[in-house]
Length: 305
Image (cartoon, rainbow, N blue to C red; front, top):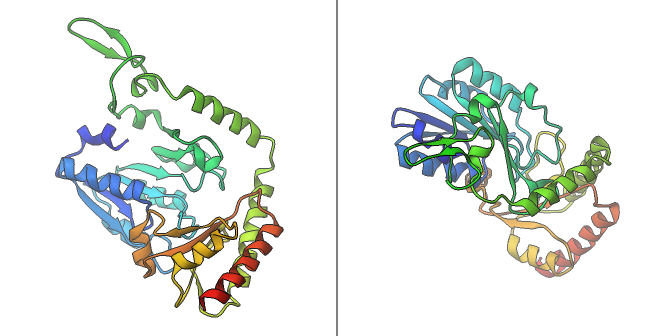
């Protein structure tokens, strides 16, 4: 998408992102700004991990061409009040709005019309689909502004010796042979998801995660980085214990969790940490999984403390 908008950006323009963003958003727009000379402005997040709305209002101007924000954090599970943020952006600028919904798509039923974003993007594997497939949707007026990233077959309407006419959307943005197997696989996943009670499944995963947060609070030297809303993500550290060592011992006991910077170094810097541990719960997890985690955690802590 960044390459698609690049011809419209110049040194007079400003692009807004935030400390809450994944590197996929953060790095992409920094590199885009280098190519066109545009200025990047990074919005701060507050102590509750929500984007500072006053800072957003102050940063918006006639120079703001794009605001790219994440919906849900992959670090803490914090859900931004994205609809309200978009309303503020509409009120104080004419900027295009891109919503990174990669972490939100499996947890929130998103109404595109109600949200009023110009662009919304997510990865298929974030909602149990195949790897290597992404989705970009949005308003026709916004998508029409994108220039093709690649050129080739299936994206043209007419080709002659001296003139080329591109096909209508979405075909003009989809040069070459698409990931047919991935698309078919993702369609099967979407059909499968329709069989589940979305709300009940999400509440089940949240209940497990929140119970883990409660129990972790009883552990000495454990610090949690909780989202202001109940979520399926548990982000934590143990003071005095290396996160990688703890992760290794947990992994050896078949506990799958993420350790590191979570592709979000500015976010980790805002937390005041270089690395954290993260458990992510899904509808297929059970109370037995929770008990297995705490059994493994106790064994690991006995070795490390």
